[in-house]
Length: 360
Image (tube, rainbow, N blue to C red; front, side):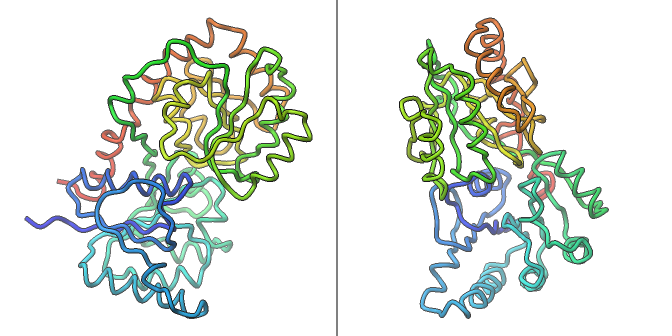
């Protein structure tokens, strides 16, 4: 029996949550009995993936920029036809109406599933609700990565073709079994250096106010991005040079996460942040702000981490101090961490994708 063929269309497999998800999805769909093809708009690959790869950026080299997008569209259509793709899962930002209208034509004859990765809809829908409804009303399913996103999609656009499937973690069993006798005096952030999303200003101001550096705690920021200089300047402005360290991006920062006292997330908005579930899966509690969306659907306050009012540096500083000073609370959250996200394993989330794409 021939396998159904699915193409995952994404901007890239480079540094970032949506990109990491696209790479994970290749493994989930392959395990669901599908033939997997990854189609990348840009030539940027950091994460491991499985299946075939078609790189539109590489295939369209030599074209003038004004024609390159058109050539990518033609190459995409040809690839779908030649490889007899049955299903398209589109993980890209989708906010330019004309481009998406053309893409809709390119995808004709395939079952199409769109993923909405962020509570901030400016990346995933055209600004006009009318045109958004025209574009997406007849796709097979709009897959949302959190219940809060799905509720917002239904409320704004009155769509019925929606479904929530959470992002999974993908960590080898031997990694999950490793333990740390005593966490280091390190608070860890890992992710993209993008101030408008991740709000490093809040993180650094709260760390400064907490004064936990006086108890020899350090803040490590691991990742890469366009705002590294901004972050370095903020560290300098707050006189935190001796206590905050920038670490390079790492595909699987499992050792650093496992050894951290706790990890931290201070975003203005999210989707369903992989950094939180990976941290908890490795047994490291999390302090996160209650942003839209994701943290509230993962963190149970004072059970596997602390959920803090957003944009409140004083409350965030107090939470840091609680995890440093209250050993009973901290140990309780730590012992509950891994169990609290078992339902988000790659195996469990794969079943959900299989049920919609390849039901038996």
